[in-house]
Every structure is written in C-alpha cells, then in structure tokens.
Image 1 (cartoon, one colour):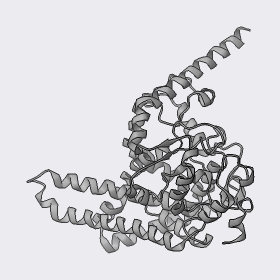
Image 2 (cartoon, rainbow, N blue to C red; image 1 turned 30 degrees about the vertical axis):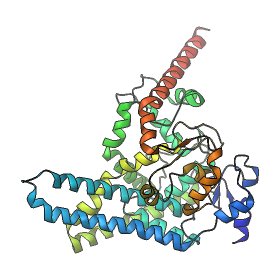
Image 3 (cartoon, one colour; image 1 turned 180 degrees about the vertical axis):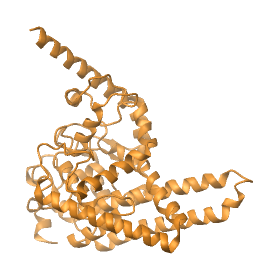
Amino acid sequence: MTRDAADPDARHARGMHAEGDDWSKLPNSQRKDRPLSSAQLKELAAKSNGKGFVALAGNCSLILATGGAIMLTDGVLVPALWRQAWPPLLLLLLLLWQGFLLSALGFAAQHECLHYTAFRTKSLNSLVGRLVSVPSFAFFLHEQAMHKEHHTYTQDLERDPELVAEVAGCTYSGAASGLPDGVDLAAVAAAGRNGFKKVPLSRAQYFERFTCLSGYTSSKLKKFWHCGRGVPVDYSSDGWLLKHCPPGARLTASLQYEARVQAGGTLALLLLWLAALGWRSLLLTWLLPAYLGPPLLYFVQMHEHAACALDPDGLSNTRTTLTSPLINFVMWNMSYHAEHHLYTILPFHALPRAHALLKQNLVNLSEGGHLSVHRQVLGSWIREQHDAIVKAAKSGAAGKENEKSD
C-alpha cells in the first residue's frame, strides 16, 4: 500500500484540470458525508491487476461468445425462417444482448479505467481504457474530463456536466418534452430542489430514449468531429456549456490529438475486419449491435441520480440499485453507484463490501432492481417533475409580468 492510499487527502482532485484520483469538491478529511474510517478505506482501496483482468476477460469472452452465436444463428437457422418464426427473434435477442455488452464495455470498463481503479498502474488503466472504448465508439479522454467535473460537482445544476446538458435539453418544445413554449433554463433551475428529478420530461420522451437510436450515435460522432477539429464540446456534443470551467489550450490539444488517433485507428480496424471477415460479420457482430446497444445501457444507468437530492451530500445525491450478479459483473458493479460516488478511489471489486458498510447510511437505495426504478419513473417521477417545471415556468412568467407592470 502506497503512502497516497493511506492518505486520501493527498489524492484529492477538484475539477477536470486537476491531477489525483479522489475526484471531489472537498478533500476526504473535510467530507462530512463519508462515514468510513481510515482503516476501512485503506483496506477497500487496494487495487488488483488480477481482478481487473478477470473482469475484462469475462466481458470480452461474453462478447466473443455472443458474436459467435450471432454468426451461427445467421448461417444455420436463416434457411428455416420460412418454416418457423423464432429464429429471427433469437437473432434479434442476440443482437440486443451483444449491443448491451459492447455498450457496457465502453462505459463500465472504460469508467473503471478512467478512474485508474481497474488495475494497479495509471499507464495500464489508460491503455486498457482507450482500447475498450473503441467497440462502442466511446471517447476515453473526453469522458474522463467530463467525469471529473461530474464527480466534483455532482447534482449541481450549473456545474455538473450531466445536469447542465440535461437541463439544456429541457429547453426545446415539442411532443416529446411535453412542456409549454417558453420554458427555459431558468424554469428548470427554479424547479430544482422542489421537483427536478433528472428523468425524462414526459412518457413520450422516456420511450424516445429507447427508440431514437440515431441520437446516441450522432452524439458520439459529433464529439469526435468537433474535438478532432480543435473545437471541444461537452456532453451536449454541440458546444461548451460549462461556463465555470473553460476547456483550456492543453485539454483542447489533447482532445484533438486523441480524437484523431482513435478515429484513424477505428477506421483502420473496420477496414481490416472487412477484408479479413467480410461485411456480414462486421455488421452483425459489431456495427449493428453497437447501434442498438445504448438504450439498453441507459436502462441500467437511469437510476444513478434519479430522484436524488440536488446537493453535495454523497449519501443523498446518488442512488444505489441492487441488481442481478450478471448485470453487476457486466457493469463492473456500477449499480453500487452511491458507494462509488462517495469514494471514487475504491476499485469495482470493493464496492459490494463498501455497500455492506454503508447501506444503513444511504438515502436512496432501490432494492427491487432496475425494473422497480423504471416503474417509479413512469408511475410518478415524470409527472412530479413535469408539474414542478411547469409551475416554476408559470411563476417565473408571472414575476416578469409583475416587473413590467411596475
């Protein structure tokens, strides 16, 4: 165990431009929401190359096995399509499962590596993190920069990159949003502590998250395009909305370089695959699943901060959702999300043990799994959030009218 592991304050990093791996607004010694003792934290923070490689090998094996099953189904069962209906359904299920696996690799494995907790060394985490990002067209360095800011300012409507992009997306009108014309950032911010739950604005928008596949792909490609030409973007994929934290010349140059390298490498890999294995294999085992996968990843990610407090308290601003061992394995234990947010230096394999120590302190714990969270989203959270935003918008409009009359 290194000196830094024994002294979490020495690992503190605030914001996207800071070094260190304890990403937090305040150092550990000043966090009143962290109940673990120094001895407990020291034990839990131990990293393991072995456990990292086992998880990585397991995820990759599932992807290879599912890819093989897809090709077997496509080649062997397709002739029977005229005689029975289930083979195309089986192929679709395999494509969806493969898509989820690729997306989970590009999110969960990448996520663990960008925190430098999948393996013992920073260099190994950086290498593996970049490699596992390729199949799902994820962008390692971009995600790392945004993610540092997200951990530093979790649930801050003006500084958390996830919330800034989410709130900005609330400003448009239309059937999917279900909001009246004129609703803007101010109305969403005003609803903040009284009803904003970081869930879709309407049921129509909820189902759009699972059907608008092109939106996910477009967002990923735009990040590479803009960053590659030297114009950094945040999670909005169209601009830089984080007014409190400009990207700076160093990050801009790094994003440009990495976007170009990854885009070039991915193109070369696509061409090699095409030449070696043909277009059908490329389409069915990689490109089509990668296109189908993001909504399934969203299904198991929505819980992370849904209906949680908009404050810096890590015990109340993040949600842990208990789920199946298979999903925990594929997602590198990211469903223990409150534990992860409280202690970003903990490796994925320590999160279940951390949960056993912290569960009595957690405000938002969903023990019924991801389905129970989505039932709450559809049953009440969407309606409550919509009503709060509309109420805030009307109140704001009335206030403006009163100012004019005065």
